[in-house]
Amino acid sequence: MKIAFFNAKSYDIEFFNRANEQFKHELIYFESKLTVQTAELARGFSAICTFVNDALDRPLLERLAGYGVRLVALRCAGFNQVDLKAAEEFKISVVRVPAYSPYAVAEHALALILTLNRKTHRAHNRIREGNFSLEGLLGFDLHGMTVGIVGTGKIGLCFAEIMRGFQCQLLAFDPHPNPEALALGIEYVSLERLFDQASLISLHCPLIPQTRHLIDLKAVQRMKKGVMLINTSRGGLVDTGAVIDGLKSGKIGYLGLDVYEEESELFFEDHSDEVLQDDLFARLMTFPNVLITGHQAFFTEQALQNIARTTLLNVSDFEDNGFSQNRVNLKIQ
Ligand code: NAI
Image (cartoon, rainbow, N blue to C red; front, top):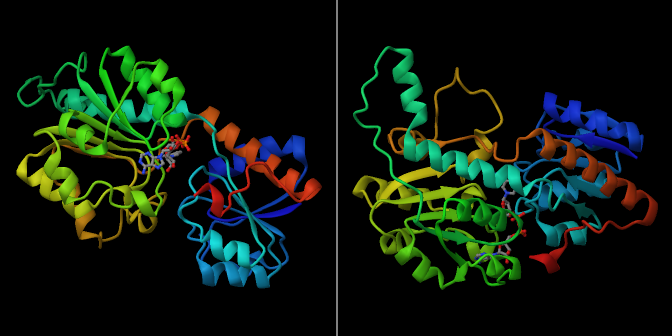
């Protein structure tokens, strides 16, 4: 099938070309993000491939349908950026990569935790300047800590296994408890109790209407003083204004983010020569106890190999059978 790739980076091209030796699709790469203005590029393609920040809203989907697009292959797990109702109406199928490496994301959550805790980023800079003082670098033992996990699917479970290695006490909230998590000794509690008791909270649930701003002012107020909050899931789970208030008051002791609500205007591009227009993001970066990465939790060799292989397989299945088991529809929301 002839597939138009939007937002294609050098690493996408490398991994997709390699995986495609087996599939023999025709891959055409465009650097531009998919927007109403660039949608014209999709004319003549029945399949397009997009990433997390290509917002597939109703007007865009309508336009794509008019150009003959029948399949949107998401090269990611999350699908909150797609108006699935509109896609169904315009007879566009949407497929995704439900799992490519839960380890990549869970391990990145740990990287944020250890860096925030032991301040290795600050120590590295100090040592390079000949400053060997330990002032301000005090950390704490993770051993025995109470960790709250919101969402115990593939990534949340992986994260739980890692934190179990530190002999943490594991609490979780998930409307669908995972038997594997129960077997690991996780205790499922209400979200309120998790906020009350956890010293470290890590978010691993999808962004859906029920989870938007799951971390709001009320949630922050319930948390333990000095709590560490980690979000490697989706930016919209967190009300940025609320966590800024929490950081200012000292309620939130550490904040690690790999995702940000307004990231689509910032992430995945080099803006180093531009004036930052997002004041909330700018404020976040002023806190010494905030660590932000630009949606890179997925970014490992193994994950990129799996993303490319599954995406091309999804397209082949759609081409051969008109159906893929990785189809996303309104029911899975
Ligand atoms: P999954 O589908 O295996 O697990 C999600 C879990 O969240 C399920 O157990 C579900 O029952 C639970 N859940 C649903 N509603 C909930 C609610 N209201 N409160 C608490 N839990 C709820 O998904 P997976 O693979 O573990 O991924 C989790 C999220 O991680 C994805 O939705 C995606 O947004 C994010 N992600 C981030 C990446 C990154 O690079 N930063 C890469 C891949 C995924």
